[in-house]
Length: 442
Image 1 (cartoon, rainbow, N blue to C red):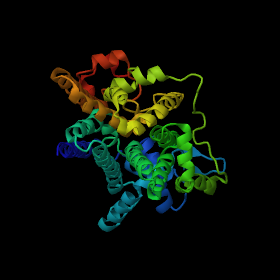
Image 2 (image 1 turned 180 degrees about the vertical axis):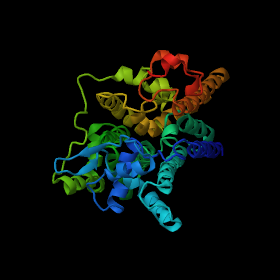
Image 3 (image 1 turned 90 degrees about the horizontal axis):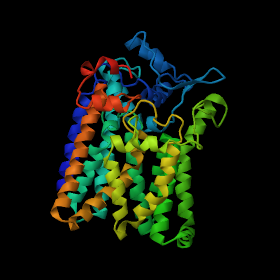
Image 4 (image 1 turned 45 degrees about the vertical axis):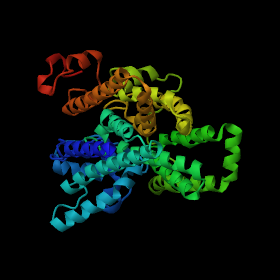
């Protein structure tokens, strides 16, 4: 099957990128956000003090003397030190952490939570979540396009090779986005099955996926709009949807209880170290809803979503031609996307620091995959030149993404300060050594 070939091709490229990543060898995996997400595990299980997240910095000094990378530590009034980041990524990484810890003890490697086995295991953890999410997405698309394996293959290539998801499932796999992609693919699957069958198990899975997503990144609560929008569409309006929900009120409550049972561990942790159920770990940061940066977030050279991931634009067009059997997807997209874009780009640091493209929007790619597949399926009715043009454009977008992913990890595309001038003058460069002197410090 063509979609299976695309999956394994993508998997091979992801593995190749991961094993050749510069972080894999010099033990730099836990620098910056990745360390902040991970630090819960050694803090809890090795150093036995939930309020001493600075243990990670102490260990880092052993391997990189003199360096004090930013890992998002927050000093509390009571003297405790915690990570500013939520628990979700650490929960997803836990099995890999224990595997690395067992290996370190067995092989006599320092079992300090930072040595080579831990770093490589955490990169493999993100790679695994990315591959599992892509495999699940392939299965999900085949459920809705059962006789169009070629369409699914192209859609899978578009998402897997043509978006910045590729970067966050390989080079930056210790970040949150690989796991989030998995949770949101699962959320879509559970949503569709729940509305189709009305079975309790799908409500439970829906709550599980939603809970893990929110524990990983609190703003993922916005994706609760996905099952709401899906239901409004498939039930034919607000009143029929309300009646359907009432008829399964127990399942709705069950889904909410499952999600809450997962999310509650964050305030439980905060209370255990601070005495308070809520801790503002992003003090000094936040939203400015009166001044959103939607146009910059979508189109700018700094981090523009559609500039660095043009496949997303093709997928958005595909949402306009969704077949009737995918009206649930259309409803979910119509309700979710406007809110998501507004909230995402109302964050004061709307470019989200060091990143390739608009990384917060990776969570929406499983939903956009349906739009991409729908457009490809619709193109079967077009004349040959139009069909070929669509696939050529999609192929060029994939090549552009892979090229710019390479440039980003080589430092050519700056992690924080891209400009139009730097973009065009460095478009064909492969390393910082080739960078014009006046562009080396943006």
